Length: 111
Image (tube, rainbow, N blue to C red):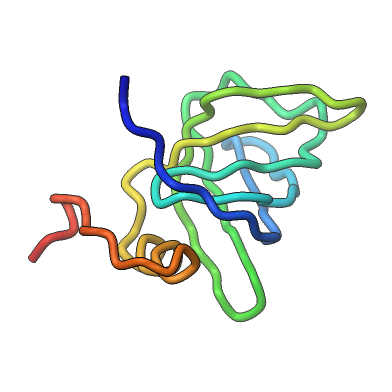
């Protein structure tokens, strides 16, 4: 079983697209390789292969591809856990700062 990444709570605005529609949601926790979103409309297509997301907080904006891991319907909304596909270095540094640590960079980001 893989080791679960440390997570940290925060609030960020998210716009996520399945390739045909764009939905808005709220990111409520993050790790270096994943995030959890809530307040995604129930009609969101959980079964698309890949999603494009723009995550924003004040002057910080991150764009990346996501793959869904799990989903839970809560009334008219969904909560969804996503894996970030090839997280950008800027994202890893941002999360490391939130976690208060300097974790080693993944091999794909080493010089």
